[in-house]
Length: 326
Image (cartoon, rainbow, N blue to C red; front, top):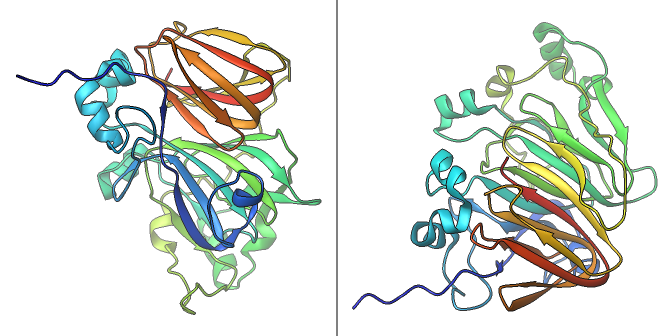
């Protein structure tokens, strides 16, 4: 007799921690991640090959994200998400801590990524969680460049003079479209929401050796066809409000709201048949649904299956990024 699957519930996943030459200690100090001194990334929910998340709580603990999708299908991801993406989980959620500036890089769009790598492209959104004084990010160019001028600047190592540096503070948000040259600056802690893709073309790495003492590979030729030489900065303007969902921004692949809560809050989820993901970016809350509950604290992430129609946040102080497929 076939064993019946347990009912779906609020799912937590084991973070996948990544040591990086540029990583710091904020993921541990601020979010209490069990991480080392150079942890650059915490992959909160991932279906990237060789970096697949496993469930951390409840009856499905130890099961991989692909296993859960394969067995629950639209009850987990939602009917239109299943129709569009099949059993591939379409988004990747991260927290990133940059003690030093990251390499300057660019991501391909869907068409280029599919033809070259058989992969999704990489559209992403950044939400700044913490920043040192005078911290900044790189997004796009200061001026429109021709390919010839760009290659000349690379060869003469003057490319930095053409990069647009944007000061950042907590609460700032940016959409990083494919083709936008970008880098996270030193002293920045952020949440990143992106398509399920790990394709990055590195164009400049500050002449900095990796942990093995060797220079990391640059992808000058691959990047050339991907770059938007007049890319905008992508900064998002939104209004902060308490105890109501605030629209932050959207891409063709996901939408993001922000919830700043100072009291208990009931949230109906029928505004979209997609799964919902909540990244806790401040405080803590106990989230209830269908008679079960999970405590979520600053730096934790939880997935709400499509089958759940309503949740309740029990809190006196908590903030979340709410993400779903439009």
